[in-house]
Structure formats: structure tokens, C-alpha cells
Image (tube, rainbow, N blue to C red; front, side, top):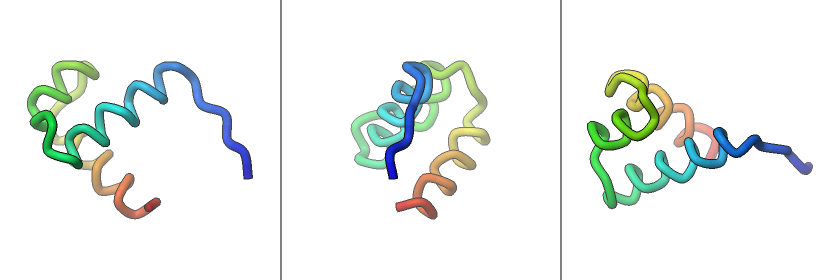
Length: 51
């Protein structure tokens, strides 16, 4: 199945993968994506469920 992603979604995924791979912190990811650290945690949980 092919899924289209916007540039914003691609950036969000890349940042979350960087957090997951310990290249950046959740705090830094929150700053980059202009989200709370709690929201970053929720996104990471959802990302892990998809993979």
C-alpha cells in the first residue's frame, strides 16, 4: 500500500526516528516540532505500535 505524506509529516517522522535512535532528545524534538514533550512521548508510543 502506498501512502502519501506531506513535507510536515515527513519532517515529523524524521525527528521522531532521531529520538528513537538516540540522536536527539525528546526535549530537542519538542522544540523542533513546536510540541510539548508529552506529545512527543505519545507520538513515539504510536510510532512504535505501527512498526
